Image (cartoon, rainbow, N blue to C red; front, side, top):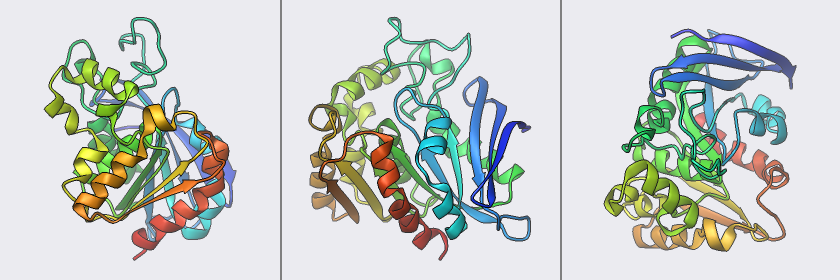
Length: 280
């Protein structure tokens, strides 16, 4: 696999770089960004935190707004952020151009329904293709953790729970905690996966958490989030964790909303949380 560097900037002693490549999982060209701390080298390969963003986002939102680089540099952790869906003229989009489905809204699953199943395999991209590419081209180890926001929080928890031997820890900001029980999730899962609710459960964080988790999970949720009651529903995560005894810490943060102001406030704590497991 080849990658093409399209931008780079020195930050916090390390480098933020953007790349494009042709994705076989998604059948299109994709873009990702990587932050490499100063101590990363071929003789000192660093662990990686994979970041999954929310609806309408690209690789740029987290990298430009989260303020994560100084802490990542201090801890010696690389960060990889990717686009939130396949892109390109041949990639189908929501018929009405809605923000919550299609382009920018891949939901980190493998679509089974036409026409989405030709391109929308974000699950395979995140779990297989992208890590292989990152480990081939950059001075990183195979030790990794996963985090995300909103739709990406859903992605981080589901992917982490379905691949518990591949990751060291999981965290999320404002995750869609039970997509089978909210409008965003019901629309996306129905169109990408069809009508089988049993199939939907394989991409539902709360349903997966009922089976237990051997990985530690940290979740921050703003109490002033406008999507809290209708779309995010953290009570489902709490109920599932109580049933299974999973190690999950859901922190409700008074006054905070759904924005990157919220994420930037608590991102250092998430990086420290992951570093405790990545640097063991």
